[in-house]
Image 1 (tube, one colour):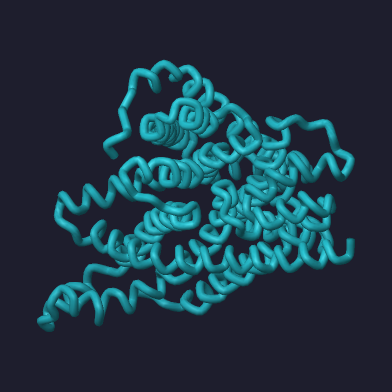
Image 2 (cartoon, chains in turn purple, orange):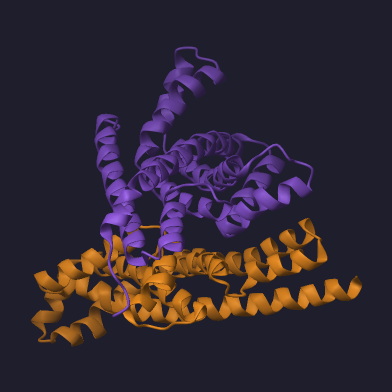
Amino acid sequence: MSAYHYNWFLAWQSFPRFYWGLALGLELAALSLLIGSVIGAFGAFGRTFGPGWLRAGIVAYVEFLRNVPLLLLVYFAFYGLPKAGITIFNNVWSFVIALSVYSGAYLTEVFRAGVSSVPTAYTEAGKAIGLTAWQRTFLITLPVTFRIILPSLSNTFISLFKDTSLASVLAVPELTYAADWLNVNTFRTIEAWTFATVMYLCAGYAIALALRRIERRYAVIR
Amino acid sequence: MAQAILLGLVQLLRGLRTTLEISAVVLVAGTVLGLVTGLALEYGNLVVRLLARAYVDTVRGIPVLVLIFACYFGLPVFGLKLSSFQAGITALSVFAAAHIAEIVRGGISSIPRAQTDGAMAIGLGFWQRLRLVILPLAIRRMLPPWVNAAVEIVKGSALLSLLGVVELLLAMQNVVGYTFIVLPFYALTALLYFAVNFTISRTAALLERRFAYLRY
């Protein structure tokens, strides 16, 4: 205790590193949520309406990904994929791929719950006015599903944002990497991790507030 | 080469044992701490409740990795000399306790007020009410999410590899490092994690179905 000298100014000087780290973390989370949602939407439709083999495959994907640590997937995307002949991804993209595939498993379940809670009366009404199956999917089921699952999507986004801290192991310069950098290079341990904690908390809280507003705007009126 | 692979398999199994040990310790510590915090959230006076709320929301609001690094690098500053294993277990327990506290609080608050009123009417004191009426009912609500929290703990234990704790993930990296066999060992490690976690989450689903009939 006695040997530690606080130097908040030094930590404040590297604020831009933290700030841009936070921004990068949000970008990574948003990108993963986007790709994961596409996977999730296809997964949910395949799981609900697909043939038996497709359903089994999607169940296997969901269960496998949900029961494996994300860090293993991140390592696999960065160190494993090149061994399998896929060498097109740098550290940032390997992480995005890993996080997208991981979130895709969770989002498949989210979308499935959403799709199955669209009232059948809606699609029946669509049939009655002569919409084709594709039109019913894109004009009725998907928009209503989206509104129903919006709260789950925003929760997923916040937890993905927290998961972006794992990108620091691939030296992606996000918030945790910034804190680790400050910690290792200046030994301002307490300052570094306090900064990171406060920024994660503020960002998480701000996102939650903003998303609640959007949720209220698009809430399903029953 | 065959010998190296065999040695690798042994190391993976040792890593798996460490992962399971970490998870077990964290689950026990997290449950005890989580139960206390959960009760504080539900029954504490304003100060206790605010403190518990601040703890739970802070820990749930930051990534586990930040918590792990903060414990590993930060605690020695305050004179706590911890090994990486101890620091990791501390961080994961603090993390697990916050999540379990929410599970406990949710379970208790889902029990209708009438149960408490009834218990009060027959003259039970606070701890008696808790032990004889509320908890037996609430535990059935808490059990499935609690088992799911165990999955999160096993997955979280993989992060301790970053502190140099040789659990399953770091054991795999070591083995890959000297055998240069990448994909099979990744697949095997993933399967081991899957085997452990799938068993746990199936148990949770089973418990959920077992208690689904309860209406109160």
